[in-house]
Length: 135
Length: 383
Image (cartoon, rainbow over all chains, first blue to last red; front, side, top):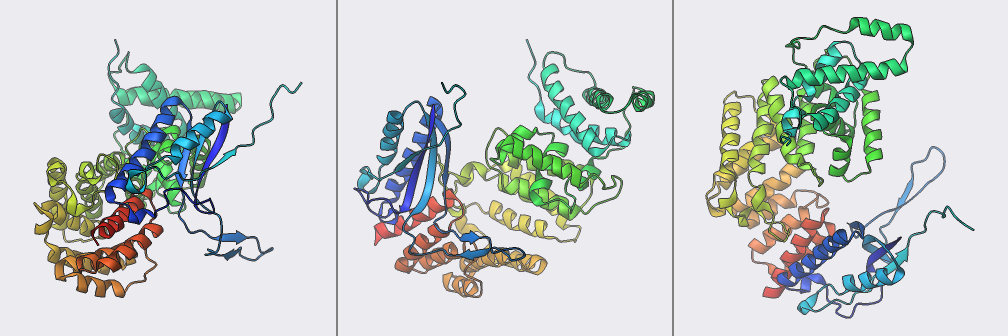
């Protein structure tokens, strides 16, 4: 089994094929999209491949240590940040091929006009624990 | 053939069993562990072999667990002393320490999240695993949170009365901020508040219980089958739980009659006015604004002022609502969403749609974000 992160971007991914902002969809199209996402996660729970899914607020803050006795420095949010994560799903699957298959299905979630968004999702393998048997 | 275990009954015995052990001189932390062990044992044994005296059974098992642990921990001499000290079996003391436990678990030295976790375990009898699930954290994290909380209150005297307001804040948090898992936290908060109301006569305890019952009554109508939020005005009022509403209103009226108004009673009064309206259009917004004025006097909270602006918008028209809103800091949560709503009611759909998009971007939860995006989409589709 291998864990993969499916990353959804607010910004930074190549443009989707059906690239229409959500507030320009009809309310029914929004409902259909949300239902698709729910069903997808529920199905992965059934198959024993779902680990976690979370959504992130679009705005965050950069923080760094500023030396002994000083409060941390904060900066941002930066309007020009190129890469902005919107959320993720973690899956635990048997193969890379299965991970790609699932990412493809998630990217087919319906959008404007009820047509698939063809959104680009980023698929990243988790680094694992070292195996016990190495020779 | 095994009988179904009444887990709520079992858990309702937690505080008094724990109190008995503490009265016997066991430290709170050790007693709490022993009672948890006894609860686990009860879940295993009771279905096949239900005890005649459930509470006495739990006290006996918890006491033995405590002794076993102590035997493993301390020197022989100390152990013999303890065995000598074992109280005679028989009727358990009638003193109820339930109230003291609420105070201890909501002690001001605890952070809110620790107080919530400790209350759910020591008063509510939930397992660490159940609490961890409900708050979406790993079980080991929740176990640490609880044991740190127990250490924090280890020096607190058990017989000193605490502040009921701190207990109410903890119960309010449990009611308002549950997530998922196999435990219904809202129902659990109601159970714990009801149990508290049984051991202390306080109008704000009654006020909080009424508030919870009145909100819980609307639960079935608050989300659509697809999980989306249904705002109050669009809820199917036929699905509101009238038994729960009647109980809430009765408790609230008795509390208000005592003329010691507090914030929970005022909030419950607002919920009762909503519950009382057969349709959204028949809501008595003028009275609701008056209650928000009371609430502002009691708490001076910006969130209350924001909700008041919504009520003013209904009572005196959207322009009046927008004027009330203009006086508030626009970084307040839901400020933009309220502005969008009031502009829509004022007929300015373009501004409303833009603000709904902005409000969705600022939403702090997914259901609200989806709802606000849908509102923007609805207006954009109409224009």
